[in-house]
Image (cartoon, rainbow, N blue to C red; front, side, top):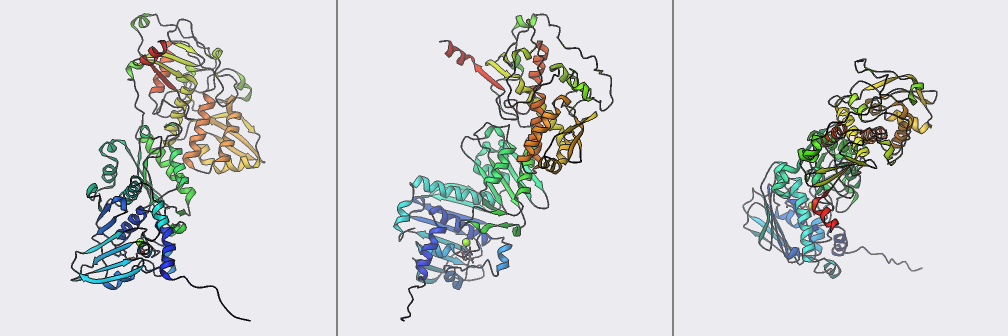
Length: 613
Ligand code: ADP
Ligand code: MG
């Protein structure tokens, strides 16, 4: 038998060329790797010079540590790195690089001239390397730090070279990488030149200034700061106010330990935080910086390292969601309107002179406005009767219960998603000047005709009331004289129990006894008539969601608001309608309901005229 072997080890330069395909996809990849090396070398100033979108030249100059002659030659070898000494180091990475393959890859597919000097050395070193082969080395006079000049990229990989997109596209990729790194390191000065034109000159700055330098001056007023610290993650940065959300994914930047990364999962948390504030299909802009223990992340999952695994991703999701939502609430984000508030309710002088109509309110004989006991009781037998709920306000800083009872009286009503409002549900007096049809209020505004979907308006008002007070205090609850037993599955009970803290905060009091859920108290905005339906709705919400505080709260409050808005409306006179409109316009986002449905639409005079032509 002849012993022979067909297997041979690939020569290094071929192995490098193959590896290069993974790490270096386009000129922008070279820019990224070399800028990261400069940062790892503790540079405080980094200059990037590009010619013809990187096809002719990519040069990165830094004032960092520099290298000795030995290292200047060694750095191009595969797996040559000064950043990882043992396997353990891989679990506590604080540097950008660690694989030791970027320079080997770049040198395999281009011509590289390296000039470098350590500050304690009199002279520097120059190394010229082409297609992994060192062509020359010499001692030179140069300044402290390192300069890499990369020419003829992909000269020996024609397939790659032909695969490159137009110069414009390739340069955009370079700018993307440059911005990501510059945003991650505001304490470093950066400059980007293209064909000798200065594209960016970024001086060392605080984070906000760096972001504004990149976003443009107008950006400053658009930023809402985010700041949250927990044991597991610290979160800082900014989101852009909802009105600057974009149809295309615009400025969306996530960083962990000063490293840019992408995450659909966290992006989802951010979008969720904006839910109800921006339109469907538009995307919020953000600059978010996470800091986590490096041993709790794995940056090794992707060769170009833009995807990162987090050990505590669910917790981080929840923190992102709740802190953005809180910040948006705190900074009182309101969309800009095309009409002014005072003039949006303007009535013509003749309308103003009309006598005010007496409101037609269903008299509620049980209701005692002077009853100040904190929780009124309901018996189950009371539940089908029409009655006001509770004389207590249901939000600490908001309107009182009796205001609400003026808007609607209660009757049994199924909770259906977007159940259309019957015109018969609206008690509109004939003499009123607002026109109401199919639950829509039509009213003149400064710019034309404004239309308001009343049920969604109420949903928005209740949602805001509850969520505003929810942030600081538990929602007022009302005790039930006869507790309600809810039919529930084991899973429902598990989810209910898991979310109990939030559910209690919302004003529910409950216990699980012999496998049954017993409700002893309800949030006072929720009439007992609607309890069973609402709780079933809540079951379906918590079954689908993780235990994310903000997320669960948003959905639960939204469900409560939805069920409360199902009651027949009483908009029997101008005052009530006006009061509803005023309440709506004092909401942070009066244009959209919590479930992102449009509340207000305006037809301008011009639009109306066009239709009449
Ligand atoms: P890695 O960054 O993963 O270590 P690289 O191939 O990018 O691998 O770089 C190899 C080594 O070359 C680095 O570990 C570092 O020691 C050295 N090096 C690269 N760029 C610079 C620089 N700009 N300044 C100083 N040293 C550098
Ligand atoms: Mg590197």
